[in-house]
Length: 288
Image (cartoon, rainbow, N blue to C red):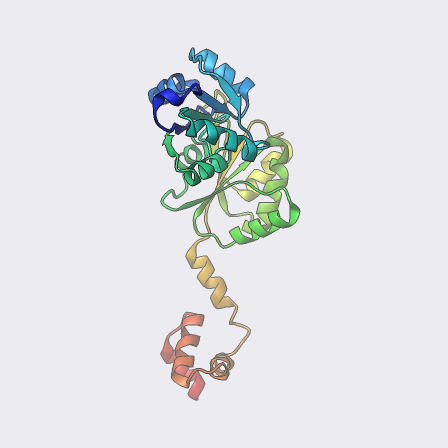
């Protein structure tokens, strides 16, 4: 008999959110769970030991990080099958959100093991809610890819994103990233620069790309950053789409659709929609 079989059931995987800076942000439920589980899988056991010592948590720790996430997940799944309850924690924030956890959760679902998430701190949501930018619709990009081509592709995809965008960045890469994003979004696009969230030197300021690039030309970035970027307005997208047709006359525009197989009435209707004008204007210009 292994050490967990007396439970008579499979174990449960608990995804436990831990503070991103201020230790008072940990929840009572997370503290209780970390003390009650059989094992804590931590991104960095040295870092997590400080957390455990602070809250007098005696549960054994094992490492689970980016570089062992596949093989170690199999080991942890075997322990869960045998009845062990396991908590997953990262250095800061919610496991699985730009941190180890996703692969283990995937393998647990494939093995039929119960997974539950204990909510708590997440830098992306913390930054979004205090950014001063729209919060109803947003997309989370985490850290941009390090591969140059993939990075260009992702940034290009974001060019016409209408949702508020959230990007993480380290201080030594911040200037480069801001310069790349400014080329795509333009100097006038608004963003909130959030750094050292929940910590003593927390700072959030709503600005524009032009202003923030100039600021960091004279100030060295320090701390961990979350960039919350305003999405592109639908009105701007519509105007850009309409402007694409200005090099073509209305007659040429309608004839293009007719050549593509539309009848004259539908072609005039489509041209009017493209140009943001009335069907009457198109008709008058086309038949004169």
